Every structure is written in structure tokens, then in C-alpha cells.
Length: 260
Image (cartoon, rainbow, N blue to C red; front, side, top):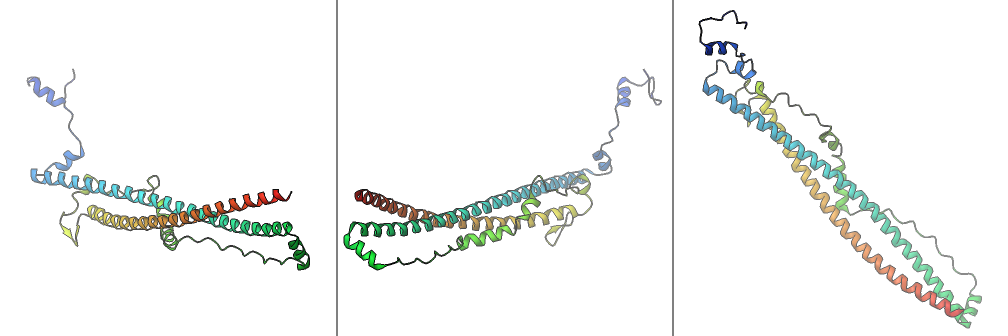
């Protein structure tokens, strides 16, 4: 067995084993050298504070990402509701036109059934020309939903910037080396430690943005609720029109059969 140069052949076996143990070259051992127990405990506490700050920052970024994603889904839902409102308005207009056509058919049937009606139609001459139907106005969602959609669209770019798969966090300052470079005292409400101060400022900014995002989500939800209630009323009105139209069509068909 090869011994190190400093080996003493008369030394105990324990001393020989001790000489073969690798010397620790860890970062903590080198940085802790010369520190008192109190300083070492303070350093460990500062490192724990930095880890907690980093975890809190990551949590707020994840929360912001969820808020932006929910907001994006809310805007897409609102846009789909607007398209549905347009379809309901076109259907309502179509039912009105069908009702006018049925009234015209009813007059013709009545005139055919009556001899005097036929004579009246003969002397009446050309039927009156109907004015061209007015172009239906573009559908407009309720004002609350329009305002909420406009506000949310202004922050649409933040969805991409905050997406977990796209966002790059600058957390290089969090670690053991960052915990001892400054004093832990506070200035203007923030720690003097540069990395911890930046973490606290980022936390404050993220919390403010979370508050704004939740407020936008609330307005968007209230706008969606109002739009859904309005469209429910429109659907109820359409159902009534369809029921009346069905009765008129059935009655008209029966009158035509009786003419044969």
C-alpha cells in the first residue's frame, strides 16, 4: 500500500485512516471559514430568507400567468357570445319577414274564398309595392361587456409575456453568494440587500398587477353574466315568435287544403 509522504509508520491506524480522508472543498466550508457560530447562523437564516423570497416570487408569477390565461379565455368566450347574439338577431329578423309573408298569404286566401274579394282585387289594380327591408344594424353587446373586453384586450400581450413556457425569470442573484453582500437593515421599507430588495419590489408589483387582473376578471364575469341574461330574454322572445308562427303556418295550410 502506498502511503502519503507525511505518513508515520509508527502512527495509529486511526491516524492513517484520517490521512486518507478527502478534504472537503465545498463552497460552504470555504465561506464559513473564519465565521463565528452567530455569523454562521445569521448566514443560514439569510439564505433561508432568500429561498423563501424566490419561492414567493415564483408563486406570484404563476398566479399572474393563471390570471392572464383566465382573462384570455374570458375574452374568447365574450367574442363567441357576441357572435351568438348576432345569430339571434338575424333569426329574429327572419321570423319577422316570415310573419309578413304569412299575412300576405292570408289576405290572398281570404280574397280567393270571397267572390266580392276577387272583384275588389280586380278593381284595386296593382298591389302596393313594399319598401325595401332595412338592413339590420350590427349587433352590439351590452355596454358593461364591451368595456370589460376592451380593458382586457389592452393586457392581452401580457399573456404571452407571462406564460410559464415563455417567461424567463432572472433569479441568478438568489443563492448563497447573494446573502452576505449587503446589510439586512431596511431602507424606505425595503431591505438594503440588493437581491432581496429587488425580490420585494417585484412581489409588490406582482401583487398590484394581480389585484388589477382580478378586478378585470370580475368586470369581465359581470359583463358575461349580463350578456347571457340579455340573450336568454332574446331566446325566450324567439320561442314565443316561433310558437305563434307555427300556429299561423298550420292554419294557413288548413285553409289551402279547404280551397281544393
